[in-house]
Image 1 (cartoon, rainbow, N blue to C red):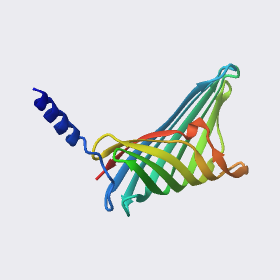
Image 2: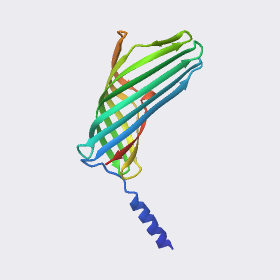
Image 3: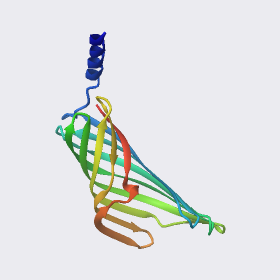
Length: 195
């Protein structure tokens, strides 16, 4: 009976072989960031971002690719009866370098350049007013981790941003800065599939 248990454990363990990305693999990824908050000043916020990606492994540790993104944000100030909403679309290019200390776990550093275009509106008790259109550019590096749950599927998380960010709007305002951003809204969770 003991030998049967050992055989079952050995067969189960061998069936859990984890992925090692290889040159030529196709990489599909979808990530999500979510932020829900409120303050004592009766202001509630909701932010949601979705980013699908596709890439190609040019080596066993480097993938290059393209991404698209959509972001929505809403805030509701109950004290002033003001609702603000925004929507942005964008895309960019990225390169990711994997450091693989274990078969089922990897750290990565992803460098990329992304742009987005957006619009916003403000609604009060007197009516709705369209806000300025916006443009943003981000170029930098984001660290992350991948945990391979099967041969082809990995769960991912990344947090933070080191690089340059620029934004401008149709009302002639603009802002650019270089730095490290550790704001919680930079956290993303995703799933990657290898083909």
